[in-house]
Length: 451
Ligand SMILES: C[S@@+](CC[C@H](N)C(=O)[O-])C[C@H]1O[C@@H](n2cnc3c(N)ncnc32)[C@H](O)[C@@H]1O
Image (cartoon, rainbow, N blue to C red; front, side, top):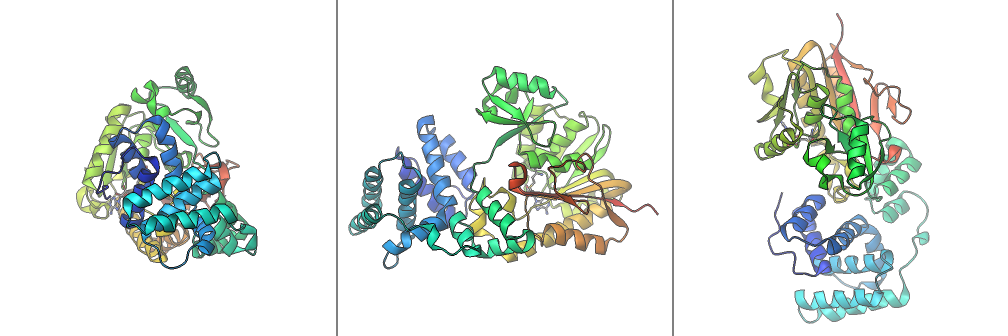
């Protein structure tokens, strides 16, 4: 993760949004982390925080639509930062209609003067004044179909084509639109400490408006207010987690006293869920390749009071040497993946991923599963999950795994199999963001065949 090289915050929200967008473009920085870090580092006040977030996410999310709007007004090549400034400005003109358009143009010209040489400011001024005078072209000019969906939802055409082939054109279009909706904020109740009703009462007493989750009984969704700023959070009664992320651990079907391995554990969202469901009795070995991420697992375990968690770093493909074969009752492989299911939280994913990434990631996932297969006890359960809807990863990896391990089989997904909102087919669950407003996810469970 790259840190911003220069001071991003100089008191001007639009200038800061532009710096963040440039950092995302140039250094493939993650939008959510960079925004969070910027707000924390510069102590940006609540009144500016909302606009900074809206400008950054909005401009990033609508990048291709904004370029479509800008195209008739731009002649010749523009520097990257000038194009980004124009996108940022057109985003405000088209989508944030409460901001007076002339103020948008004025701000953009001032930024151009500060950042560029003297001919840039009149260029920016001229383009934006033409946009105001003539208005942007309608998306209805595009013929219905994949190319239109791609531009109006700002997703690369090849990705919409790929989803259309997998889920059908209509479902792919719904998904692309859903990816531009703001994500819900949900929490998981630490049932080792408190009941769901008690957690709801505790959050409501602190002014957070909540509702029950759609699928998982221990999930509460915040309708208004930030649960991360509550005593309930500090006391370890809740964890901020998307509802779909809770599903793999339910499928793992753990019970107190078990020996469990989480092969891809950081930041510990699922590790802590496992330990909670085991009532903190037994052992949960939490491995991640990145040593610096172990502190996140430790901090989460400490806040939640879960002493059964043992974080360790290293490549989980080498764990047979450490633990020996047939060592664990349960193994979770919540694998590194293309993350297409979390585009709402990290819109840059839709522009950055390529088919080559899918191939590389599916190979890594297969290798992790091969190791899990050696480490699991004869009657143990392995759960493989990803936060993506990419066929080469999910279904492709399952197919390869079953081919290479004919002694293994898929088993029905514990606790999930009868839920009407969960799209389970052939014992594999593929959640799409439009199913119940949470992240896209894939979950499958394996067991050794009874001989
Ligand atoms: C999807 S994230 C895990 C999220 C985590 N399970 C949770 O719920 O908080 C995948 C993780 O796998 C880790 N990882 C990638 N390659 C790995 C490897 N070869 N061995 C162990 N961990 C790996 C990454 O560092 C990343 O933290």
